[in-house]
Image (cartoon, helix red, strand yellow):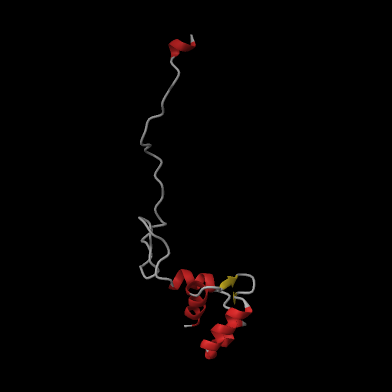
Length: 105
């Protein structure tokens, strides 16, 4: 998968970064030379871009958050019922009247 190749370069290798303007992997000339020597079949990644890299990270990364609201990209979407309407006909609290008739007179 092309995204995985970009992801591994950017996040798992020292000296590589991501340019969100050109959608390409960045690195020094020396770093690229070392990497291309070790991976000659992948040399096109130096000039090739991946415009939806950030979106692919959200979809294919193993997790997107931690804690109580953490969601894995492999989990099904949350069940939301957008058709529910807020019922305001029965307020849960009575309005509080801070003025008394005696205080006004």
